[in-house]
Image 1: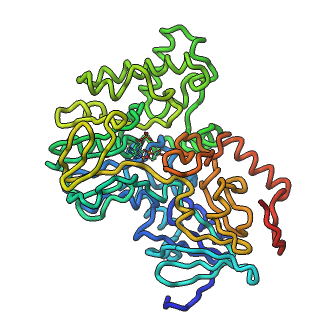
Image 2: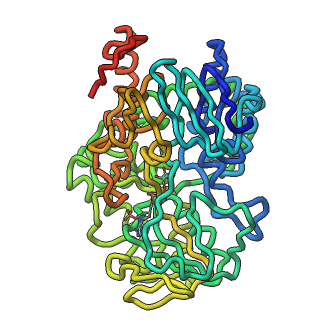
Image 3: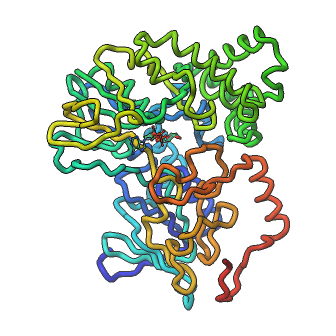
Length: 498
Ligand code: NA7
């Protein structure tokens, strides 16, 4: 629309990821006129932004989901009955195809506007409408606002002295450029060894000339056990109700994954039984060793030590260089096993063992600066062509803070959350009427890095609901049964809850 024009809808949904795609059909069914505003040029949320260009010359950074199939999809028969992922842990390209499939199935495209970057949203108390402003200068009015901006909407780029001097290329994993990025024969630095770092390292290490990995904390990552899914077998699983059973199982576990948890404690079993059990979990792959292991893994230091020892022995067999082994699987772990979310790997330790790959321990040798040619630490200067920042996200709240949100009486979200994040059950915010979101701050999760501790200056607090999925669902249901007890509905009151 032209500048100055003000359109009106019943609902605006910010973001064309899983949240927006979940909500749009539901709102339509209620007879509401709704539009999704998406700042990107395509749907899929992180799976859109993670895309690494149309035709990478050699390889892509390997971005893929780490939730076990079939958990990472819409639990909706209409969607899954004729879409089957080809891998147990699908890559970003297939996830983009998946979003196109959903879009078609639910006829969503006609209500999505791309390149619509929402910069502010103000509640107008008189008209009881939200005024939603975009960077293209347009304003749209709506009654309901859904901020499904995603928990990983804003990447975190640490301050690196001299980064403007650096003459090579520098990218964050969450915003891989759309032009072709050749990794082959390049000298590459990767900073960060979380899920994204591991995925890039595995791909880059195989083709590049030289890779330097800057590691702060070793990742106690687990074998993914990736495999191709057989379409015939998957069809059989669908027909026999196994998909539905898996979706139901997700709702029953604390982490929302389809793993059966174990009530037994570590030392209830003999050491032979333990080794056999752990080996089986590793063989099964994914997060089983962490989530479906012994019940006292994170409650008893001795139990934790035993699990770490098993993990370490397993990993040491795969690392040839003793110096690298010391950095990747230290005798004394920097944190208890599983207290920090492990990632999933495919051939991480083999790639790191290659002679063209070095690891620099940032605890011993912090980055001093970047210069024209590369990265300088006290261990020396490394010249590189490409620096990959795999440094994670300003999680959960970052996407909200990018929008200037003003609720009742001009209350700004920035001010309201300045001394801590406050939400109503992780779906709404007091004083911000008719504003809802899915999987935002204080929704359930067990990921320990979601406390803000990775962002300098950000308050460290529980940003997610630590009680697990079943208790959260129960709380939501009880509130519904009690006819929204604790919520203010349809009242014109200006009294602001604190
Ligand atoms: P993560 O998991 O937050 O990983 C970020 C990594 O970057 C991690 O290894 C950090 O080390 C490291 N990091 C962060 N800041 C710095 C600085 N300043 N210097 C050096 N290293 C740094 O993000 P990902 O993108 O890998 O994964 C995000 C989620 O995607 C993941 O949890 C899954 O849900 C999928 P640290 O461990 O903090 O010492």
